[in-house]
Image (cartoon, rainbow, N blue to C red; front, side, top):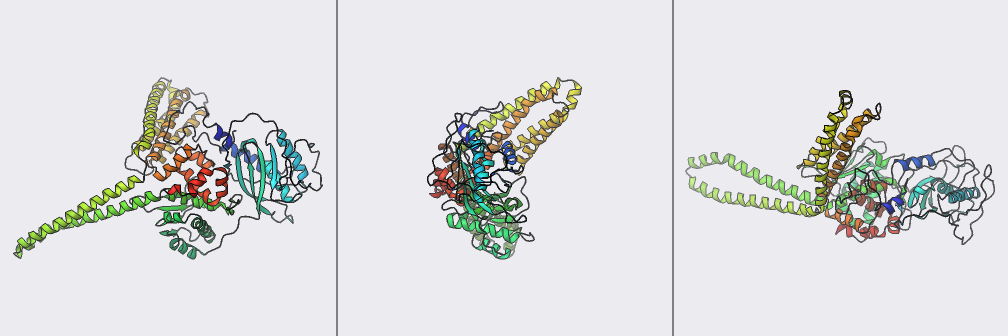
Length: 621
């Protein structure tokens, strides 16, 4: 499968599948990148798993850190690895000979950050750097890599061997143009029952296939200062402005988790103190799950709901002891949960002005409602007050007072209405103009028409099938019709009914399950060919409606980032950002923002224009 870098370089030349349309979806969104064309798909995960979780290779080892270059001409290994000391690297090694490679399209200069959870497995005792050089030279000959080197370890050390093994196991063409940061073994255990020594290792393979492994630090990620649940919660509310901290009581690792959250936010305060305000008034909530693989979720709230930042079990997954972030100059290494927490902070920053405007409008609406209640209360009691004035023979005085009071009430009502209008204008000012969403709106309308036509034509053809074949495919047909209804409900919603998008997505998934149920016993059932165009048209329509839904609600702060990405043709350099870009470009903003905080060296080295966007404060303007 193509590598991250292949995808970046070829995205403008990619051919479209029949169900896709080559037209602009929304300003700044590349129509060639969708969920079916990601650089981190299942095929790559299976490749990584096969390479990294297989049985240990007999006689295989690793290579050297003071830049030991790979060579192509060493003899192939015969039998077990020789038990001889590894040679020391020369002070100024010559570059390794380059294996002839097939022509490759020009690729962007930066690396993609591979965040696959990767375990490298064991290395057999007695493996040497000499043997690893032979194996790696074979990889060069096979054009899996073009050169190799290691950094940060002593020649002949066990750490050298383990770093070379990392290159050997991960050195594949699909990984060209990537960086991966691993917490992994860098030596053998002192005793059989002991755990092996760990280290922080960064493995890079550039766009030309040059592979390097660097030992960033021995040991795991630095521990964070520990606090109690009570003290940590108090600091989160008093120092960072959270409205409340809940959901941790009774959890076995609650104190350790709150300590991580606090440490991540301390990093935020050091690196971007101006963004702490985006968390004020937000409810921080610990939950067990958020659906699927979601680790965190930020919501700016609404006119009736408070903003929330939720963290699920997956955010603190104890199984994820194999990743770290940072490690370069100015980027001290941190554990994986830091990035999760700060990714959600990125969402809060992206919507900071929107949330402030929403809260201002909520306050204005509350004041307007209070005025209306006052007027209603007065109207309800006016008859009794009038009767009392007549009884006391003070009708004229009462009427004069009512004129004055009525004027005050009208003025208060006018002022409350004006403030609601001003708050509405201020809220709209945080959002993009309708022009931004117009292309998406036009495309959604076109996709709706095509889906309706495709369904009508499919059903007409289906009706002509023999009764047994209609009967056996009837469930699938009903699911097709139900999906059309669900997408229509989502597309025509004007009041923001919660969950309609999820209903449409689930309906499409149920439609596909019913198709699978039909296909299993009858792979060539005639209904499949007849109705498949309707399925493709529905998928295109649903995607277009989802894109439109997000485009209409995009903040100006996010649009500035989208414009940056499209102007500079910046690839989405994490799998998560790539996968979500078309529907939710805000995920790329949050990914880039969090990397600016946890690994500024990576961002500055590979994607300088993105680094400058955050470092110079452009994202806040």
